[in-house]
Image 1 (spheres, rainbow, N blue to C red):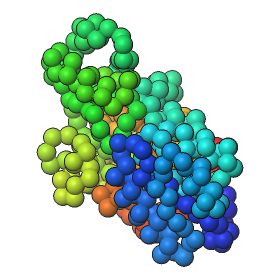
Image 2 (tube, one colour; image 1 turned 90 degrees about the horizontal axis):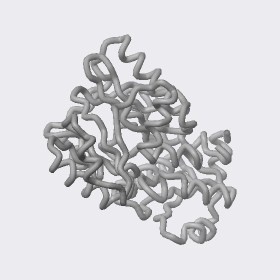
Image 3 (cartoon, rainbow, N blue to C red; image 1 turned 180 degrees about the vertical axis):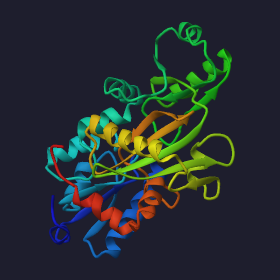
Amino acid sequence: MLSRLELKNKKIAVLMGGLSAEREISLRTGQAVLNALLEADYNATAIDVTKNLAQQLLEAKTELAFIALHGRHGEDGTVQGLLELMQIPYTGSGVLSSSLAMNKAMTKEILLYNKLSTPDFKVYRLGEDLSAMIKCCQQFPLVVKPAREGSTIGVSIVGTPQQLNAGILKALECDDLVVIEEFIKGDEVTVGVLNGEALPIIQVKPKQGFYDYRSKYTPGQTEYLVPAPLAAELYRQLQDASEAACRALHCRGAARVDFMIRERQFYCLEINTIPGMTETSLLPKAAASSRMDFIELVLRILEDAGLNK
């Protein structure tokens, strides 16, 4: 771990934009991070990631990368692998943990192995018998989601076999691997984990429907309660489970763990290894609740940058 004084002497590239369906959110995250670093007087520049990222990194004389990419080709271990090959230290989780966390099906397998609860699920792969999958799904409603997308892109909540068929086809437009998950009716909460320690819990209350892309990124569409108004014991258990989930996947830097709560039982939905840092994002809200301003949050993520994670 480098000191802040040492980091000030490094040429830092903030990697943003990229090639995924979450490009626009990544640009907002990256710009917020870049502004914070410049305000703190760090030598930072932006790279809007293309297929020629290696050349972009060389041209920028990059000595350290702050990854502000979301979704595929950024959050899934691919960029992390390139940075390892180029021996450029980077923020956040390493190759394996990034890849595992990006795949919701694999994440759930690891959670179950570590005795962490998650909604019951099935996995459908492109080319398998779709009608057979629909026949074996008897309990509705269900949540259908692409296994390797974020920001609720391609997600449906379905209540009939016909809707399930449509939901799977919709998810297949984003990914050839689809998770079909038990729908948990209850309260949604999220726990930021920074360098292994849980931040204050946020309860998420969308004003309409579920916490979809519009609710996440449109100011005023969602109410955020922080710290979440939960019983003390449940609050502690959720923070412990969040830290345990991040340890299970070997996450580094900043992460965010999403849960549903039903009758005091909680279920882990997914782990995000590069949480959003926009004006409506949850991790900065959690940090602010613990009296950590945005610049300090960015610097703490930066301090943990490294290789071979």
